Image 1: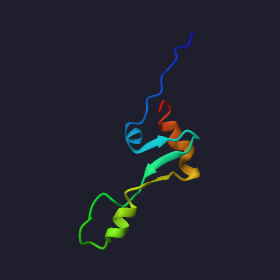
Image 2: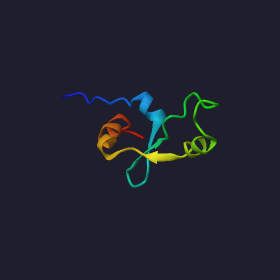
Image 3: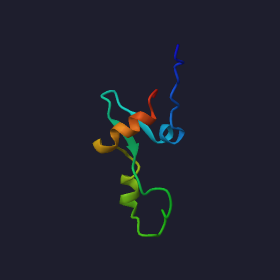
Image 4: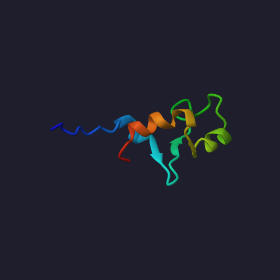
Length: 70
């Protein structure tokens, strides 16, 4: 009898993505990791980057494979 193998969740992906009730992949905005004061990013831009957005449909299948059990 073949042994069932559990697939591990990708630890980097589980920190970065979550699924909505409808199955969309939610992610944080990019470009908010460093150079946040006095390097060309306005307060308005930084405030807009606080929110979340959805991952592109072309990447959705790959992300869902990485976060199977989430």
